[in-house]
Each structure stands twice: as C-alpha cells, then as structure tokens.
Image (tube, rainbow over all chains, first blue to last red; front, top):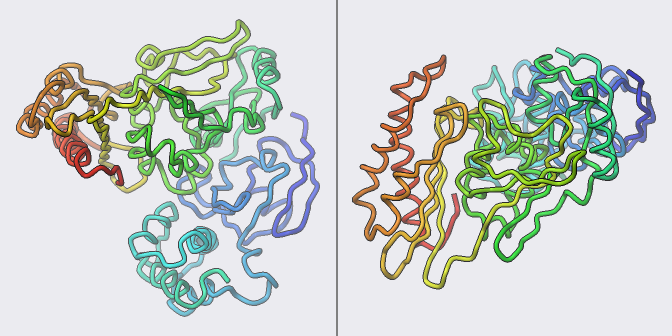
Length: 159
Length: 299
C-alpha cells in the first residue's frame, strides 16, 4: 500500500515522515525516530510497556498506528525531563525506592504514573494500583513501584 | 506481530467515510479507538484492505443530552463518557460499567460506540446497551437507518451492521423518572484480573418509588454467559411493582442462574459461571436498591 505522509510532534520536536499505514506508533518511535526508550512488549495492547502520551493522555502505542498520530503531540519517556539530562522527581523516586529491576516495564510505568500525578497529586495506594493496573511488571511485585509513586507525590510529583 | 498491509483514509465528513467504505467493496473496516480492532489486526485475525479512520469526524465527538435520551457519538472516548456529568446523572448504568473496561490507557482511546458495535460477548457496554434499550444510528450507501439493540446483535462478535455501513452514534433512552422515583444502577464483574475480560458480569437498574419503597421498573442482565448479552424478562417482571423487594433478590438471582446455559471454557466451567451469575445478580440488585436511598451512584 502507499505510504502516507505524516507530521507529528514528539517530545516537542516536529517530525515529518512517510510511513506505511500498518506501522504501529511504537515501531515508528523506535525504528524511524530511534527513540528506543519506549519498549514494545506484547504488541496487542495488554502489557502496557509501550505506553506513551498522545495529546496529553496515556495510550498504548502498539495498537495505535503511526498514521493515526498525524497532527498529534506525543510524549515518550525521553521527554519527561524538561532538559533531557536530569531526572524528574518521579524518576528519582523509582531509583530511590528500587521501583524496577529489569527495567522493561519502567518507561510505561513512568508515563502512566506521570499522567496519574498530574491529575491526582496525592493518590492513595489503591488509586495508584488502579491507575497502573494496565502496566505489567514481572520483577518487582509492584510494591516498590507503588512506593515510588507515593514518594514522588511527596517530593514534587512530575514537576 | 504486525498486521498485514492495509490502505488508510481519514475522511473529514460522514459522506466521505461512507463513500470510502463503499469503494472498499466489503474489504473496508472502520477504526475509531482501535482497542479491539488493533489487537485483531496485529494478530492478523482480521485483514481488511482499507481502514477508514473516523477520528476526524468531529461532529461525532459529542455527548448530547436530549429530553428523553442521551446520544453518544461514534468518536466519544470511554474516558470522556466516564467523566461526563450528563452520563453520570442521566445514564447511571453506563457510568457504573465504564470503569470496568480495560485500563485507563484503554479507555483513553476506546470509544463507547465502538464497544457497542464490536459485540464482544463478555464486554460491558453491549450489556448496558441491551439493558437500556439503546438504538444504534447507522449511515450507509442506502441512507440512514436505526437498529434496536436486541435485534442488532446476531451472535458472537456479529451484528446486523453491513460492511459498507457506519455506526455514527448510539442513543440511550433516558426519560426523567417521575417525581418521587429514583433511578439507581449497579454493575459487578468477575474477571481473573482487574481489567481483564469478564468471566461473568451483571448489570441492574432499578427505578424506585422511595416513599413507598417499591420498584417501579427493573432491568437485569448478564454478559459472559452466552454469545450475546442477555436480559431476563421473568426476573424484571418479578421485581416490577415489588415493595420491600430485598426479600426476593435471592430468588430472582436463582431464577436468572437457572435460566442461563453458559459454556465451559479454559477460564470457567458452566456450573461455575452459573454460580457466579447468581451471586453477581443478587449483589447488583442489592447495591442498586441501597443506592436509590443513598441518592448517589458512586462505584
């Protein structure tokens, strides 16, 4: 099929590319833009590893096609910190609380938790578990992830 | 896991969308939220030649409250409906069911109409649409038509929608209850993990004459127990007009459980489903009844 021209903003930078319609947004981010911070796991909308923000809300980028993101604004894990070199309070809290082991789920967790803290700066443990329910972690048992989000809520959330 | 190649258009008008579907000669597929279609595409269980993306049809992005109904357009996200004051007030059963759909990421993208039309036999919104006598508004090459929900569902993932037709909205009847009558709803779901597909889910909506402590109208339904969501006329009749109905909730739930004939699968045996159905029906009736007096419909 014919490639489609798309123009979208990723982490504040505008990109113009041609993509085959079947290319998922996550493959586009990783393979076309070399933004490999977003991980691709199950590829059918279950595991949450590929979570990015599309126009400010978290979505699964494996079941959105890049062509659908034409005109949209995307934030990936690379775009969470405003200067790209320091960590956000949430990222610091993941380090502090040991909120990860292998790190595969972490980009999706960070995006989902960032969205949560923007809307609800002081979430309860239950609210955190509910909001992160769509992100699967096989290492931590989730306890330290929940603690990291609670710590971030106390130390400045998403800044 | 990548979909097979497909063409893609994102029309700006309903007329262009219908034209694109007609040109695809049965090989076109409408995509709105894509939360069910995306996985099916990626797993190559569906292989349409053309995706018609309706997300740019801004005229279908509204929740419109009319005198006796609420109309939800085809690109209204589940998350938007979940946060809508109109939905909370006028469609308490929809509001109760929405949080059970997938996860936040799913609801940020998934649409109300898409879920109703996808007709998954364990999904929440088809059950709610059935209980509320919803109407699907359809536009196709032959013009506009409407389909009422019990007739719209033909079986497992199958509806009366033709490949060249577009579901543009779902209308949920929502007449104001008469003075003194409170409408209260409850939804309950059993799944292996929160956010998973339901093994069984139950919905109840009661219109209650609060002063007389009497049920004026009742809707009771289940999903996950057949190829389509089911409503239970005998149970509703038994509840309608009943004063102090809590004493009959258990027997009504038993009747419902006896009436169904679910299949066994990997997740649950038929016997287990019947048992869960009985418990959930009893639970949603109890919850709806209590909510009618508490004057709230929070989950």
